[in-house]
Length: 590
Image (spheres, rainbow, N blue to C red):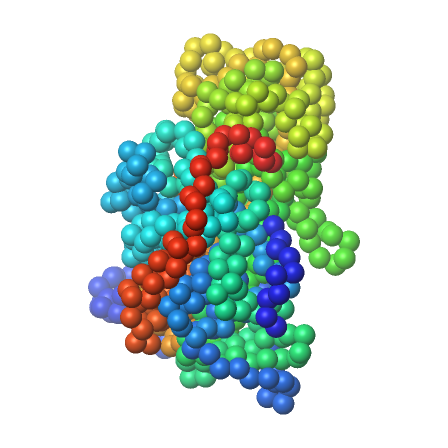
């Protein structure tokens, strides 16, 4: 079904070991044949669809499964290339995208005089991943991200919106010497339509392309290690789409509690809120595995320290009353949680340096009772936040305060009563649920923290002096938080050509994976201080793959690209003035 513009929604040991090399070790007389690996319960069996149940069969060159950030970039570029493609989306609508995208050394960045060291950036991303990454995938993003931003900028300009650099706050982001160059680009006016997905989708449909909605992938069509398309469940029954190239752009599995509990227990242990896209249930990852692809081993969640909850709520899944699981938080994100104020555990004690990447404090909280933390501040918090100068999307609450906001007006704007307010620290302790020894410890921790502020030296966890704050002036505020789960990043193993790989690292013919459905870029954690790299790599991978397919099909990619960009530029009658980022962001401080 064509997209109709109805709505958008926001080893064994070495074989060389000689038998007598180690004395005193007994060897079995007969080797036992290894048993075949058992498929995990969350994977299940590949569905069977009888040929007689296929109501329609379609043919295309490039099949793109999923119309999110990666899939739309792939489809829009395929359109620009004049490539025959079929874009399938399981929802009846297109999901919204974050307004941020990470790119390296764009013209905007160069004009600001803040060019990044690309070699240092490559090494920093490799360090985040503990070396468990494909450097060429990372280099693809570094080398091609500026072009991607400059490709879609005219699309925004044509509808009166600008692409801009936010108030990035400088490179000092806290923690222990992270390299955090400016990569964040903001499109449109902070959460006010159109979103990037909408603009790129309109580019597709305005120029004769089709987004086929209500196409839910059931399985890939594969035989003898080759993928030749996919079968979809649609309003018209099962439809098979045959393709020379099939790319999975279906996202991760954050919305699949079974997979999360099996693959990411540490993330579950500290998560209280859902900020993920509901369609991200691991469909593409499982379909790829049924076809022989391997999945990245290291669990890699994207966690933000903003899952605000009431006192006494534990992190982790709870029964949803319908035979399934849900997260207990009712607020998908409360941005204030990312500010580096004092954070304590259920025992009333400080437990980590609060000036660290978002997931760092979440995982630290996962080792504490209940998997949650309590953030405490006083009436001077707005001035403190301006001084803290948090970058990335944590800047939202900072900018709210910089525009004259207060904690009270923030609570009113957010419509939440999760932040507790009291005239005394003792009263606040009661409201936050501290009792007995925990209350005594909490009060003592406040005194200790004030002493650290007075000395301007954190002798406990070595937080930077400029991010210390005192808690002395009423009213006092506190709120409990866990992690807010945005997505997962440990998808199918791929190479630098974006081909899905089997367990022996060999490409599976005809199968590709991009965006969160793919792996080998991140490992264990998301590099929060390199802002927007997830959306950036998804966009770049989608665009790169479409160009590679076009080239393989004999299309003059450079000529087609120049032609498309000329048409985009011609559609811009007037380049809009860049809006005040701070004012726009302050209005959407979530």
